[in-house]
Length: 311
Image (cartoon, rainbow, N blue to C red; front, side):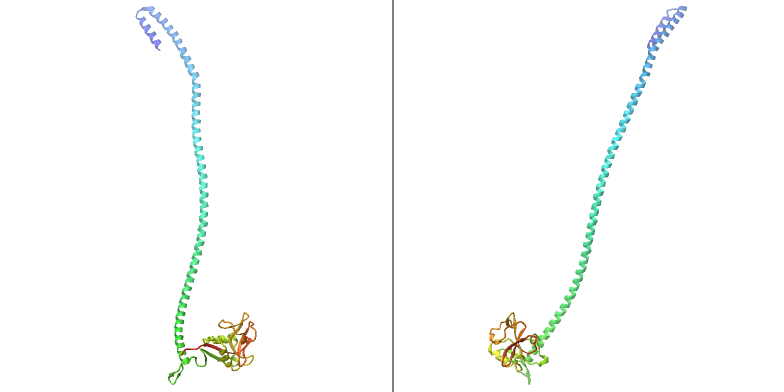
């Protein structure tokens, strides 16, 4: 375009100098030259256009490749991001599953512990109920025992008063409004510092050795224990109705191969009884004969002994 303007400028310049037909001829000549030049200038332009046209598919291919690569890159980035998120989700899911399993195990353990605690609570409640019931029973028993103790104390006091009165009446009988006290109560024989009850029971009322001893205990005494020869003579002399196999029970029996008195002492003089000690044998006092051994289960009369009262 620049060259054409220059050519036209030169043409304009020349046309001012040449007149007439020459100008016309010159114009035709210039026109032909311009046409030739235009053709010459048009040929490179066409070549450029051809070159540009030939390069366009390469640029388009490159652009398409770049676009495809960009798209692949974006897709890869998105895929990588999705893959990371997917892996993270899987990891989180597994962690949640583990946590869920642990929670289930903890819940199971807590449930078992709760069941055990409930059983303990039930057992403790039952024990508490039993203890409360036993406490009530003990309170009731305590109340009964307290009442019994109170009643026994009252009875004991009354008994002591009665016994004291009985003792006064027994040891100090009243005769003509006067009391004369004795070392032994009425019906008992006094000898040295002791009192003796000669139980001269008839055959139907006679007792075994154990029964006779219980009778003596009921009289606040025991079967007679003979200490010396003088007391032995007194006991034998007071054994009125007796024979060899029938007599009066005394507090002597065979125990462990020995003759023992009811106070726990051993018989020191073996000459007092001729028969050897054998379990199941007890001694009787026979008038004018001394002491004999018979079966403890036989029925006999008996003699009780207790201390005399100091007057």
